[in-house]
Length: 282
Image (tube, helix red, strand yellow):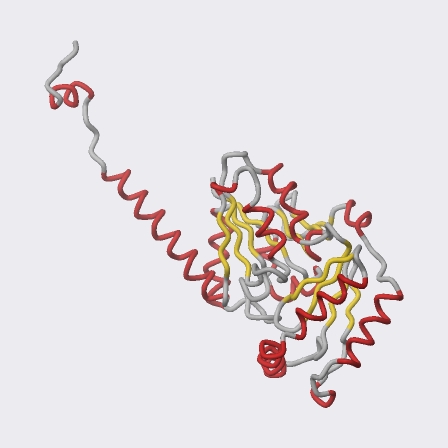
């Protein structure tokens, strides 16, 4: 059995937007017939804004905040339940980090007139930092994305954060943010747990849009491809949610075609096979 692990923002949905109707219809059927895990840097509230509940409740596990806040549906009903262990993983953002992020915000060359507020979002087990601010519209996000591709500011800020706070990890996340959390609490933390769910010989396919070094999908991609079973697994580097849709459609088409081949293959009597080989055994 194949096990599927998906990032959400930019991989299953447009960035910070709801899942499109096309993907919703397709993925609703997909989760019914496959083992699916979701992992996102977002909190559960934002996750539920983007992904319909009838999909979330059919996933094996929903890992929020890079895996430090976990939800599932053990009773098969329409509700998600948080694990008791979630509370053990909560982390308080140090005052020193907040002050440094404010310094970076002041040092940024991105125009202050284009900033939208909500620059430091403190979640249960991590912090998301954004120069343009998380109140940005889709169009404003696009403007900042183009600016950051040219200036590479987020990658530089992330490196500075790790240099100043060696016990923290900072990764470029989504279109406008940086995810910050204690070392070891990135998305790679979910892999040992997923391996407990699956047979050691079952492949794991991971889909993420930030799998390059410095991105928040990179730690899980690296851990997956560095494992002892790496020849079984695969990482799909996604540029757009449509890439995910196209790849899954192709996989489904190949599975249907393979199934048809098995169904149409004629049954041959063993004695006939031996006769064809020129040897008959009674």
